[in-house]
Length: 48
Image (cartoon, rainbow, N blue to C red):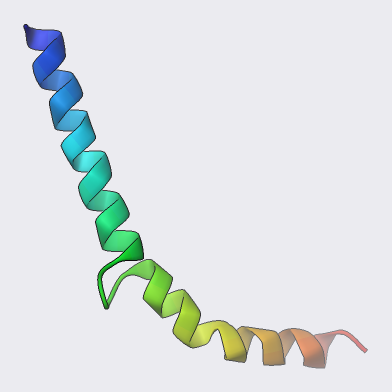
């Protein structure tokens, strides 16, 4: 019984973390998408 509870808890934590990263407006994925042009520009300046 305890193993089932731990598994369910881990599943909930994993799903909420994935949601926070990929689907929320202020998530990591959204931040990376917004800063991608800047990163690309810096890489172009660095490489001749």
